[in-house]
Length: 404
Image 1 (cartoon, rainbow, N blue to C red):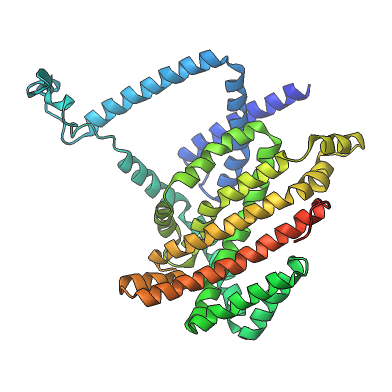
Image 2: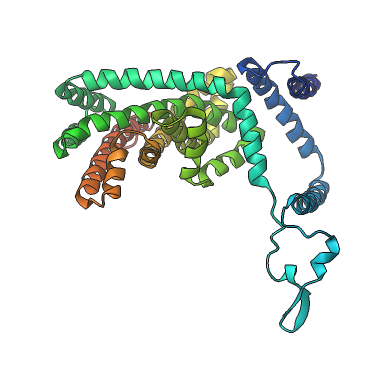
């Protein structure tokens, strides 16, 4: 009965999802954030239904239809590119008017040199869709950008106005307690924090700006990434659906994230924070998924035998044992966020990356190297703090491990 009920829910969801799209297209429902929220709610079970149907179909049949569908799409794209090209010949027969030889074999010229009319207009489709998206939902992203900018400005203002000795003492105190009272790690982190300002006085405020962006970006990654990783670990279908998205996020060059960020949020810190999320979140999602999957089955069976519910299993068994992997994901997220902040300096983002870019523009080796060392010191501080806390958790979850 449960399977039948779930199937009915998924069928109803996909019908509602299609109805929302049609209603919005015909301007029956306004395109606002409430509509986006509804569409997201009904999109998830709709995708699950499609995946379930694909799993029911035999693999050889699914592979055959995939090949047929791919061939149809390819032929359609070739026809569209020919018809939409401004450089196509007046008549189709004109393609065979010019011939050339390849290894003594006469061939039409368009088979030797790539024809200029064979150009799929992806760029025009993307630009047209992007302009339509901005016209419909631009106000929503303005509100998101304002909220992020307000949080960034307030947090940066508090830290900048705090006397620098108190900031260093605060960093030392946090490191001391999160590392399990390791004096060596604490002293090293305190020395690196002090040396950021000691390299150049203006680096202190720049480092605070960079740290604020990284902290907000990592917070967004944690809020969104960990639940997605949990969902992937608990459902193989969700995992198979999200993995291609994560692969795409990691393969696309980091510079490509800056363009939509500028269009949606303008110049400054906000597109940098969004770029940090897209660039740095995949490792956290993957390691959260991996950490939960690596929990010993015997431990899970023992929890089930004591009558633990799914919620108790997740919060009381799986997440505590997966915390070392999750902390490693946060550590990797932090390092990638710092790398993205340097790249984002190209779109007007203030911070230490701005100093590196300035040294590059002026061909000032000393200034660029000095700013680079400040970024290295900041990376060491953030890395040691997150890594020390991860080691502390691992020592607590694995009592037999020797403390370093």
